[in-house]
Amino acid sequence: MSMNWPCWNLARACRSSSETGAGDSAAIGWILSSVIEDLNASIDELVEWAAAQPRTRRARAEVLDRIAALLNDQWRPLIRFAQVNQAAMSDLPAGAQMQERMLTMVSVLSSPEDGAVQQFEARLAVIALILGSGPFLVGLDLTDEERATTAMTVATRLISDR
Image (tube, one colour):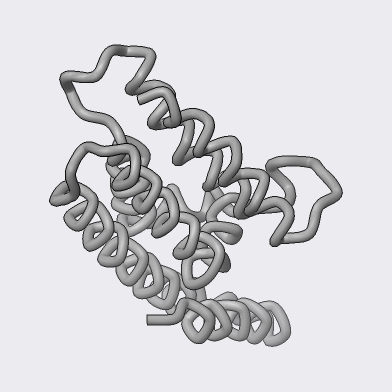
């Protein structure tokens, strides 16, 4: 499911509320919660799929590819919104659920039997992809495509010695 439509509705609701002065925060919260629930479901699907994969270099690379594809497509608007509006996100139960899901996703490339360094590198690989999905976190003058490619290069290097 594409995240563009619900995010467009969220932006429209925010604009309407500010133009009318009504501040319909309940409607905005409902829309945002709905979008977050879609994101959470897609994270759950990704984590379930990743858990079923063999612990090989090729499988880890495929997991990174799938995360990057989602971050650079359907998740991009919500991830950017969440990065900019962390306070609003923390006020919503769905925002707390999103945070839990993101933590689960960050650990999808590691396993308990890995050493601390390997677990940390695996988590950093996913975090590199997340950072690469938003221009304001990296602070480099890159296009979305250049930033995503750079993030994937870093992520791949972090898991290459495993």
